[in-house]
Length: 618
Image (cartoon, rainbow, N blue to C red; front, top):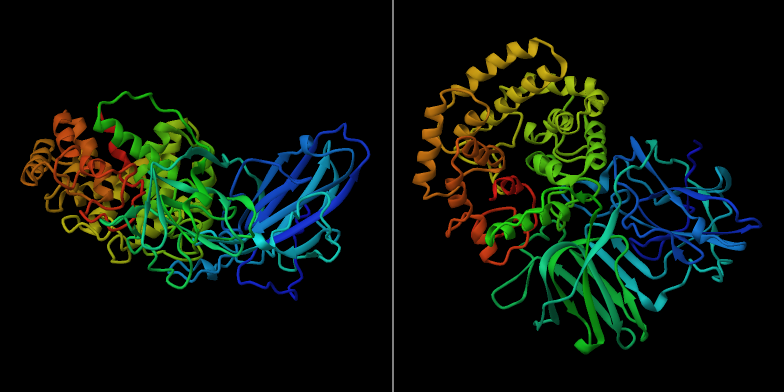
C-alpha cells in the first residue's frame, strides 16, 4: 500500500495552540452504480463527512497505538452518501494521543510517535481507486475549534463556526494539502476492533445552584460527554466542568485529579455563543463524570443537557443475573466500571489518565472474558503490549507507551504471558501466543534475571501504596510461578517444570501472614491447605470480616474462599457495614467501582481493578 499521508504545510501556523485541522475535496461521479468504499487513517482523531453527512456513528476514531509500529486502517461503506454529479469529502482531525501537547508525568507529549495531524485516504468504486490523498485536497486550521486535547477538553467558538463539510462551502481561500515529509512509520493493518459509540443517553436527576453556576447530577458515573442545547445571547463563554463527585455543600469536587494539569483545562469543555440556538457535544475528547457544573449562562432555562455514555462496543455476554438488592447494585457498578474504561483497550480511569494500565487489565481479565465479547479488542491490546517491549525485553506499565514506565514489574508486564494463556483457555485459540512467542521468551528471561533484585516497584497495590504485609518479592515470585506453569502447558518444555519446583519452595518460605499470601497459596494449591486456610480465616476474623488486600491479593482472596466453600464469609466481607466494603460504596451512592477503599474516596471513582468480586455475588 502506498501509505502517503497529507496534511498542512508546516510554514502555516495555527492561530491557536491546539486547534483542529480541516480537509476537504470535491469530486464528480458520473455513475453511482457501484459499491463505494472509503479507507482512512486519520491521525490523531478523525471525523469523516461526505456531502455534509457524517459517514459513521462511531466516535473517537482512529484507533490509538504506538503509531511508529502499528497503524490501523478503517474501512467504511459510503455508498449511501455519494450522489451523481458533484460530491465533497471532508475530514476534521483532532490531536488525540498522536499529537498530545499536555505536559504530564507520562510524557506523551514527548512520545517518539508524535507528529502533526495527518490523513491517509482512499475512495474506491468496486475496488478501483477513484480518489486518494494528494494536493488536490484543500486544508485549513479550524477557526472555531480552537483547543482540543483528549485528556483535557475542547474550546468551541460558535461565532466562528463554518459548515466546511457542506457541498456549497467555498474553500477557494484555503491552502492545498501537502504530503507529510516524515509520515508515521508503523505497519498498516485492518482495524477489527469494535468501535467506540454513543450508548445510553441520561437526563439529569437534579439541578442545583452552585457558587459559580449550576450543577447537573446525572445519577450515574460514566464515561462520555454531554450534549448541550444552547439558546443564549452572543459572546457568552459557557464552561462545562465534568466531575465524579461533589462536596458536602454540593460544589464540584475534583479529588485533586487535576494535579498534573494545573496549567491546562481538566475535564472542561468551553463553548462561546453567537446568539443563535445550537447544539454542542465534543468530538475529540471524553470525560469521566456524574456531575457537570455549567458556568456562564445568564439563565438556566437557556440550556438543556443530557449525558451520553460513550464506550467501546463490546457486547455483554454474561448471564442475566437477578441478584437481590445490594448485590445487583454491586454487580451493575462493576460492569459499568469495565465499560467506562474501554478506550481501544482497558484504561485505569476515564478522568485523569485514560491510559491502558496493564495491572488493571490483569486484575479484570477473567471478568472481561466471562462477561463481554472482547476477543478482537484483547487481540489489539496484545499487539500494543508486544509493540511496547524494549530491547532488554521488559514491558512497561502502560501500552501503548511513549517509552515510559518500565519499572512497574510483572503486575503489569506479566500480561504478555497471562493474556495469551487465558485467551487460549477461553477461546481455544493459540494465535496470541504464537504471535508473541519470541517476545514472551525474551520477557521471561528478563524477569528471571531480575527476580531477586529490587528492580521492580509494584507489588500488592492498594490504590495508593503497596500493601505492607505482602512483600513485592512475593508478588514477583508468584508471577514467575505462574509463568512457569502457563508456559509448561503451552509449550510442553520440561525446563519450566524444573523451575516450578524452585518457585514453590520460595513461595512457602515467606512468612504466612495477612490475607494475600495464604489466598495465593490456597488458590495455587501450594503448601499445607489446612494451615493456609486457618491463617486466612484468622486474619479475616481479626479484621472484623474485612478484606485487607491490594489489587494483587484481590485476584486470589475470594477465589480461595470460594474453593473452600466459605461463601457466607465472602458475603459478610462484601457487605460489611463498615469500610472497607463494597456495600459501603453502594450505600454512599456509588454506581461504579472506586480506586481505593479509603473513607474519603480521594482518588478516581471509576476504576475496574477490583471487579473480580462480581464473579462471587449470589
